[in-house]
Structures are given as C-alpha cells and as structure tokens.
Image 1 (cartoon, helix red, strand yellow):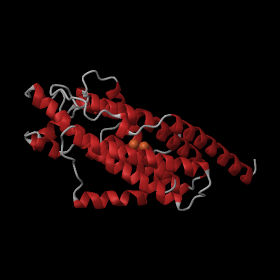
Image 2 (cartoon, rainbow, N blue to C red):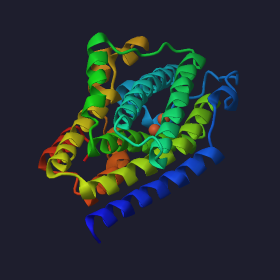
Image 3 (cartoon, rainbow, N blue to C red):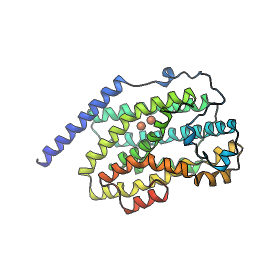
Image 4 (tube, rainbow, N blue to C red):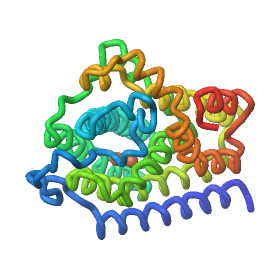
Length: 302
Ligand SMILES: [Fe+2]
Ligand SMILES: [Fe+2]
C-alpha cells in the first residue's frame, strides 16, 4: 500500500467508527434533566457509594464509626468524586475543541467529537445537579489547582489527547461499574452512574480507536511523550482519590483519616484492578516505558 492509499484507508476506518458511534448516540443518549427522578426520596441509611469503594472502608476508623457516620462519609466522597468529574470533563472538552481548530469540519470524526462534547456538557450538568440533590456542597478547586488544571488541555497534544482521555475515563469507568451491581445504593446515584457508564462506553471506544490509529503514524517523539507522560495520570488520579476536606466535613481527624486511607489495602487492591485493562491496552500499543511503569507503580496502580 502506498503512503496515500494507507492514509485514505485510515481515514475511511476512522469515519466508519465515527459513523457507528454517531448512530449509537442518536439511538441512546440521555438528558438527566428529564431522565433522572431528582426528587426521589433518599433513605438516610442507604449509601451514596458502594461501601467497598469508600476510602476508609475496613480501616480501624471505619470500624469505630456508626452506620450513619459511614453513610455521611459516602455522601461526602461521592460529592467529591462528582465535583472532580466536572473539571476533568471540562479539560477534555477543551482538548477536543483545540484539536478541532486544525481539523476538517466536514469529517465524521469531527462530528462525533462534537457529539461527545455534547455528552460531556450534559454530564457536567448531571454531576452538578447530583451534588446539589444529595444535599452536599461542591468541592471547588483552589486557585492553584484551577491554574494547574487549566494547563492540562495544552498537554493533550496528538496521541496524548487520546491517552489522557483513556487514563481518566477507563479507570473511573471500572469503578463506576461497581455502582451498577450495588444493592445498597441511593437511587439517584444509581441512575447517574447508569447514564454515565452507558455514554462513556462510546467515548472509550472512540479514544481507544484514536490511540490505535494514531500510534501507527505518530512520530517517535509523539510516542515517547505519550508513553512517558501517561504516568503523570497515576499521580493525578492518586491525588484525586483522597481529599482532606472530605474528612473535615465529616468531623473526622483529617490527618489520621488520610493516613489510614492511604494504608488501606482493600482500596488499593481495587485501584490496581481498575487499572488492569488500561495498562494492558497501553502495553499492547507500546505506550509504556520504564518511567511511566515506575510512576504507575509508585502511585499504587501496578
Ligand atoms: Fe462523561
Ligand atoms: Fe467521556
């Protein structure tokens, strides 16, 4: 195959995937404004997260808490996770929009990107509404954090845009799937997660396809950057996992709670499991190297 034929073949394959995803989005998209019963009653004894995903689950601190205190911890951690999801999706949308300035506006792949941005903006509304609905206050970014997060879209270049999307979406998706099988979960949160898992499945397919296609024609430098920089996601995801403010709002000793949460083997095992599929995919595509492997390992994902 000549270079031009190869390029045309790649574009046709990309458009084919985009067409299928656009059709899927038309058939199955949700609008949380009408698809979620926001006024559904909330039983004060029911958890806001599957209990095994709560950072302190099984620790001495957890064992000393009453049932209602545990439920409150799940409510605060849930609000924290939802707040973080809002800004992550914000950065992804910015990345997609920036790349689009260099793309053909008639291409189906661009049309699917725009569809995905639409999904994400609806998700951001849904997450914001969910925080309010469960009666929690949002966890806002500090000025320094907001400035750091503002820089993310500039690192989403070439291959890295798709790798970054997968690092955020796949690890979180794995955790969210545990919500679908949890019997002891607030109905509002169960509905939010059902919608999110269904729509994110398309985004993950698109990002995986983006990685597979780009990795073939990416420059050595582009591949090396993505293979090294994905390890930074380990640092960010680990940082996201624990937030002192959650424990403060629950009236717990925040330093001790952080210590016990970080040492919690139960939760660490879950985190490693959540990363497994993505790690395999990165390996298959030559997108890991000693630096990123070391970083993922250091932050407890390997
Ligand atoms: Fe989303
Ligand atoms: Fe997404």
